[in-house]
Length: 187
Image (cartoon, rainbow, N blue to C red):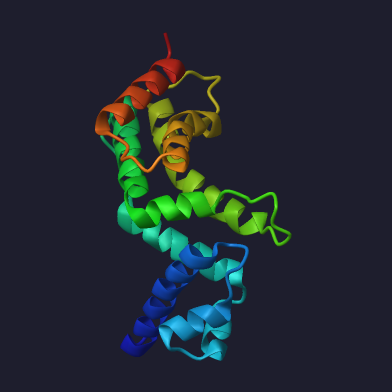
């Protein structure tokens, strides 16, 4: 990829993130991205076959810049670091807007659950590595479903971000991680 192509792609991804923050998933349009990025709509359509692909790439790109997958060597350490990273993401205005925007508006006639589902599944697949490593170390009960464990950790943080403008504190993150660790660890 040439420098020009890389710059155009980066501009489109940045514009897509701004567009999805303003309009949400359901009202997002490639033409709006092209206008924001000062690119031709044809370039945007050729590069991303669908609006959903561009939204997912923009959201995942932003998420990856804000959150890295922890590998502390222990389940508890990884859950604490993951909760702190997610709180850091949700405490940023962009992260909080994205989280709120991904909630499906039941009044909307143009709901796009596929884009939301794709974003969630990619993030879920990345995070499930934590539970695989914990299982290999013998730190995870055999009956634990990783998706449920992940939801136990992340749902309180997302709920906090949805219903409050207050920052999520590190103490709150550690408390949630402690509770989840006790719930999913062997006796």
